[in-house]
Length: 326
Ligand code: UT7
Image 1 (cartoon, rainbow, N blue to C red):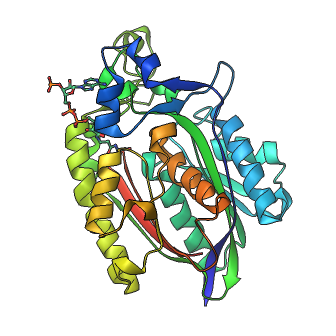
Image 2: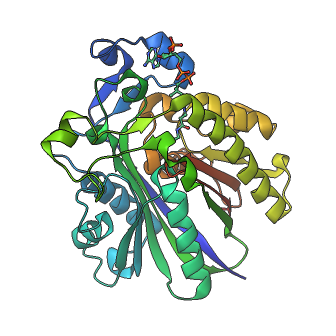
């Protein structure tokens, strides 16, 4: 059986830390509110001049090193991001140039917080089809550049970072067992970034109306997220004929601790089987899952043959999951 197997992981976070107490000085909020409603204590933010590709490059470099290959071995680069350095070229192409990955085709996947799992799904399909052999999948974001630092309902949530994995064709039982991706564009208004695209190109007016920042109806998004994630997790278990107790580790998108706890409860899973990074990184969108994966690989929580469940929900709306035999 041919599988796409993850052979290396890497991650990167900016050095600059923004704590809840820092935010208390910027908007009307409190450390207690943020901790209670989200589980976030602090997040990392890029510094002036630092870009998403800087974070993506560092994470990719580490994943390639961990995989024991060189960038020249890559034949495809897929990047999940909603905050590329530029609308064109893609972050994938910027990264390909920086890595000197001359053999690799490169492109971005635009699925917000589900971007990494959408990218993983593409990599899995391309490897199974025989089209590609060694693929770099990255999730990288600088959400702080698109955060309205005067809007307390969103600015406490987001952070910056990047994670990367190398997946390779593997004839055997280990690897990605299945991926599941879904969308509901009719609910796009719940979580969106209205300015900067073809419908509202940047003008003084769009800037004055703060249209270049992420907007979210948090409470409504929360409810849809819990329902959609429950469904996609069940779909994944059913598809693989796996029971919740078979799962060794849950690596969820880190949007809200309460959403993560709801999923763990649904799976009847104790929280020590869940990888949490939200307290220190906040919601890093497409980067959150590969960052958490890398942490769990490096601290030994993920071992050979571990059964790992990944799930994400984000703007679009989009949601996704994957089951991996490590
Ligand atoms: O990653 C993509 C997917 N994202 C998600 O799935 C995130 C989903 N949503 C959430 O995580 C939560 O809905 C939030 C953390 C965004 C908000 O938590 P909530 O429990 O849903 O709060 P809420 O929006 O219902 O607001 C409750 C109250 C409001 O005050 P009133 O109207 O009850 O007087 C807000 O104005 O909390 C107020 N509030 C704040 N208070 C202090 C909102 N933001 C803040 C804040 N500090 N930062």
